[in-house]
Length: 136
Image (tube, rainbow, N blue to C red; front, side, top):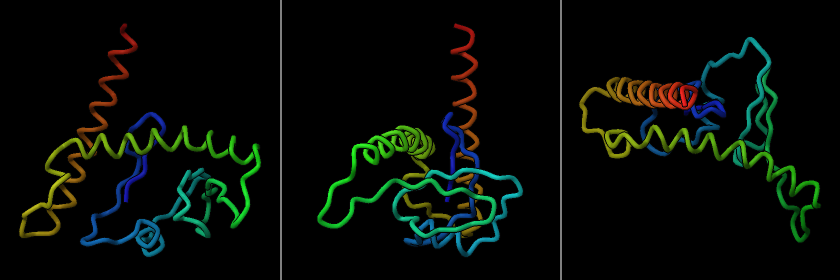
């Protein structure tokens, strides 16, 4: 599981998990603690999630056989604009092809190290972009 800031940098990375484990399950089973109040913008798969010191921001779900109001649609659009940047951070990490494909390493702990290095390289790329855009 990985979380990112709106500036596309990776903020949090859990240990890696084998197979198709959902991020919500990983989050509920982990011992992650937030000592400051934070806001977490998540998708509908996290509905019902409750974590101490975390304000969960989730899009409105369309009611069965009904439509969303214009206010709800606008709210979802604003949340979407922020979430897309987080998705871009995830895809930025996956641009490193070693993270896209199955790792054929014998020790599973090495998977965590490769993911950590990938996130570090991605953050380095983001910081470099910020520095270069500030110069211009």
